[in-house]
Length: 562
Image (cartoon, rainbow, N blue to C red; front, side, top):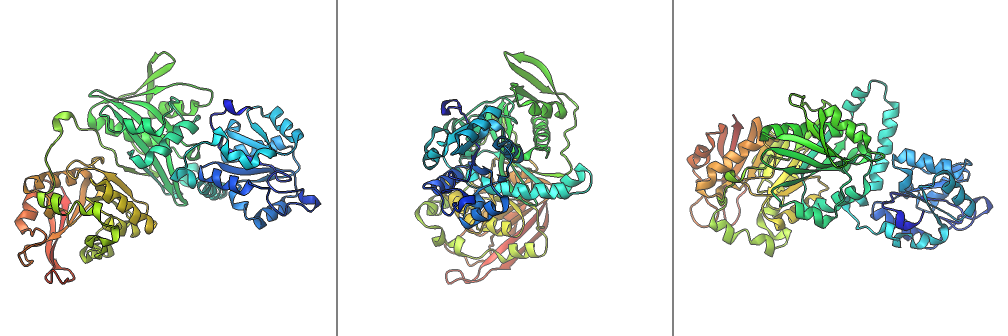
């Protein structure tokens, strides 16, 4: 099939003899890779292109030679036998759960290429003479993304999952419960745009309307009040699946319209689609709007139509070829009991509810905020200082239990968010400073922590109501303007589930007066909180002294959401 007709190639299937390596293995060849092959494997792997093998050879010997040449890890589900190459290619597509039209088969033999093309005309077949320049073809001209660079690893994890599933004895629902599925739905950030654009280009089967966007087009949607771009992530006991789907919502005062809903094929059978639609239904109910959807049928996307129908959507009409669906009133909105949901979305507030209130004092704005732009991460004093002993003790004592959904307000460069994540919490850090968030991601990456960092104002965070078990404030509240303190507690209360915990650590008025941080009295801490919280504990503790501040007296406040 000529390259101009290709839209997406997901996997390159390699022959071995005189294609991947020099010579014929059975005749003493196969001792070195052909020129340019290793560079091609590495380049395409970084772009998220998978590799496999379809070869007529003795399996044990061929696999051993691949290991000796150091390329076995690049090659997923290699098919090595004396069966026709068309059968081997079909087995690879089935094993990877991708369409035959997303495969490129490369072989030195005109006969083998013709045999595959005759049985599978949708497979693109190339001569091995093009192996060294394969990465330069237009079909592979895509920007590497973080998700793409680890796609092979995710498929290798899927192998482990598949083996576990095949060995599991019991009902399907019980199997799913053992996976410890954890689903996250969050507003898209700039870091999500390349992967989201890639999904619109690559995903055809689990795709409701087939809309395609590039990263720039998606970036233009994010600030629009009438559009909401959400990204879907999934993890289980075997590791992360990465970003596995997106939802594009058109919103107005009466309706949320799902313009695009797509998911990666690697989450088929997990009921992720049903869980996402149940979440959107609950959020739409909370916003007092109808939930509707568009569906444009193609040859392969009927599974997504069934996801809508099983979730309670019915057809209400058509706009050309597009079916218009609407969620029936009274349909259950329950989440599957084997999926733990971390929702970071919230209904957009009407314009009349917007606030221009400034959260932080002028002293902070003028004296401290610029530090993020002028210093390296390790030079900022509140980064190099150890985590508060009071917070450490809360974790040790189980007051903040392992597995809690924690929101770290004004997370800055991510010190406390990273500490909490390293101790088993699912953490979302919010800060208005893109520079601080970049430093936070740097710190989290250094400690190999999976933390969601979002840009947002602490008085109006981009997070869903009732999405947190714990909201954490470490040395933030004392920099909040007095007139904004009640609003700050109100936003913390909105984020928390009933009974959730707000943890506040700040500077106490017992410190020696003078320059430095603002000291707070107990009334200044407690009174703004009482509308939404009961005070579980408020006590002073002494932190490690420093040369500048020998009397480091701090507050620890524990506030329970009413």
